[in-house]
Length: 628
Image (cartoon, rainbow, N blue to C red):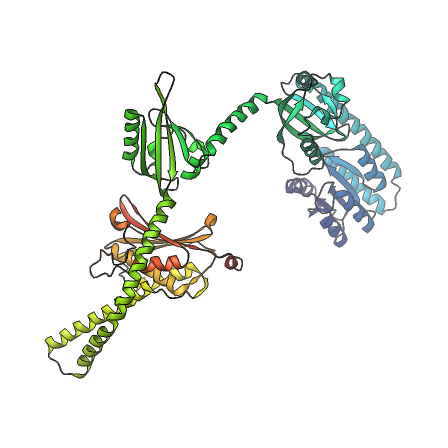
């Protein structure tokens, strides 16, 4: 007997695997399809004896696939499979469209194998021009008997669980055609209606008028198998006109062989009332731009408002509740002092440095009071914080701008006046070295003069760069590429046994519009500073990233050197401030100027155990990111 070819069409891979496992062991050759279109195409290109089609499939369902297969070859036997049985569709699929049988999920393995055997035997009979009418009629009678048995088992199950449904603490109803077809005892009790009244009234009339459209929309979406939340809240009207809130859990079901919804409803009026009280409390506190927190007498946080969470970078108050208020301050001593003064005087006002969830620091003005009860006994502490970081930045920017403006004018004038005499000194010393026979001490002195004149000339160039920054030559810049190139230049000047470089460059960074040469000057300066700082077994980390909320690329140069004292950190971008022997104090000032020209910012942070991190953030232009 030739090998039998069976087509399995189902979009559920697990169903496919189940059929393959069962039927290949029986010696059949299996073809697979994930939708009706693929199934018809398989039949068109292969000799198929039997097609097993799922009714519900994407693109083309099983019924349409059945029609297409029969158009290609009427002798191919077809079995339909589904998770929802309907007598009307059974009759239509078998008598109108020519399917042999209709199998229900989950399958009975013995029944499935037997049905496949019958289908293939029918196929052989058809091909031999045998009459199959009598066998088909007998098979339909078998299906009817089987259906009666399944109906009996279904009714038996319904009887078993009826008492459970009737005695449930939730209201349970079945809705179909916008009427209730079933209501349990509790649903009648909580609404004040009798069951007869509920089953003969459109369910929308028992819903608050402000919620009717929403509930009806959810009901219709559920029946159409569209996306709808399985749990939602609405208001139910009692018979006396009052209403109460329910939480409804809804699933689609079949009632009387037709689609319906099964609804479990629980009275949540007290919960809603409590939530409304909390909403009012939160709304009042949320109107304050200050971060407000409550703490017990030991200083442990018991409540925070949304402004507090946002200010510190937390998303959930559970991350904060129960923690010591000192945990959110940069210096524990500040928290200890605040609690001490609160206990002594009942109030405390000062400015502190706070630490966000991600470790970033910010300045805040704090105002706190001891809350007492009616007998004046302390019960808790209330603390209000106001972020003054931007205010301080604005003040520092104004001071720096004024300082830089004055220094710029002075530098430009001074550079102009010094250029000429330096040019004379440099050219004369070079002439003497190149054209005169000089004794060794004299030659060495001329060499010193020439080198220092060149150094002074370079300093003048730095002064002019600082005083009159060149116009940026903007183009699309790959930050990782520029940083890698500058690192290569820096590595040529350092002993690899003394410094280790670690690259943490994020792939796929968007390009930004900038001056590639000037940005390279910034990165090279920062790398060289770190090399000079880390002597011996130093490690320098180069890290890049993307700050999505601000649409900025970020470059970090991190070293494990001794760090920078806090007093120095405030001045490192000031012109002429340096801690290096022979340094000019203009390198970081020029870096700061270049970054500001790019509308970016540069900052320095140091750990308590040493090490320095310089961060450069540069904006990404939209027109560039779209083209990358």
